[in-house]
Amino acid sequence: MLVEGAVLDIDGPRAAYVRLREGKVVEVGARGTASRSSHERRVRGIVVPAPVNGHTHLGDAVSVREPPAGPVADLVAPPGGYKFQVLAAATAAAKRSAIRLAVARMAREGVAATLDFREEGVAGVELFRTALRGLSIRGFVFGRPLRRPVEAAELAALLRVADGVGLSSARDEDEGTRRAVARACRRAGKRFGLHASEAVREAPESYLDPTPDLLVHLAKATADDLVAVRDARVAVAVCPRSNALFGRQPDLRTMERLGLRALLGTDNAMFHTPSIWSELQFAYTSSRLVGRPTSAAFLARAALVEPWLWLGEPEAARVAPGSPVRPLVLRLPPDDPAYQVVTRVTEQVIVRAGPA
Ligand SMILES: [Zn+2]
Image 1 (cartoon, rainbow, N blue to C red):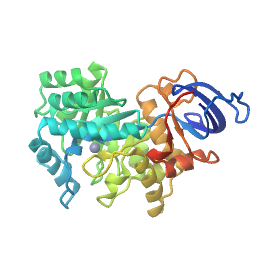
Image 2 (image 1 turned 180 degrees about the horizontal axis):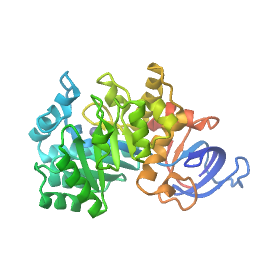
Image 3 (image 1 turned 120 degrees about the vertical axis):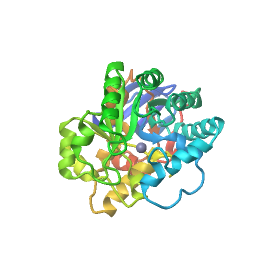
């Protein structure tokens, strides 16, 4: 397949052609200079790295009714929040099939990986792994230990099956827990993630010490807080749709101005679809709704590039021969790639790899 149009990747947007064989990039060059073969399928469009969903709770997909009204803490805070009641009441089989359906849908939308916060301890992580078996999406799983105070044996068992540990927040988890978890993650070479400043502002000292590998939300963070996060070199997963349900929004504009490393995530699957494209559209539109316009380039990067950097796989964020992850071909006008990608993508514009 020959795509004439544009590339948008770690190196930014540029006019280009891309030749793919069985979905893999074999050649990239200046637009209009590709050799022509009459048998080759030709598409006008944009080629991008496959996106990564920077924050999900896919176990929540087992919840199918409108969640009750109320503050976010009543819905998602451990141990008694609504979602934990729903998870406890559901069978393992129901949770597995709900996760599998959600992930299959993400795969159809071209997503290559998801960073999931999985509750329910070791069993929760194992259930998630089983649910993804045979699907084309990679699950990077942050597990969560069940016992408090944390026990070394449970943490060790969790880190054997998970890619890291994801905790609720510094408000919900005491310092001893956070330190024990951060230390165990470091020792195991795994990642430590933490929600922060979601419903109320928390002081950066509370969530930056011990230093996490990933913060989630920062919807209530001030500009000074964001400076502290940037200076600590901690990446942030932002979830604008989830925050909007409770009348909040992360300050994406300031994050962009400060050069924060931002990943885009869809958060709890009980609230809405885990669609990264819906999240991009909402992020772009809502940043204007609140008078804090954010560039399409920054948002596209949060879905297509920053998560790969966070995973330590920059080559996956580059459209080039030898890239370890197959890129996406989008049948969209190539004149302003970031704007198109952020405002226009649905499953229907994704061009599937076919013959030639
Ligand atoms: Zn979350």
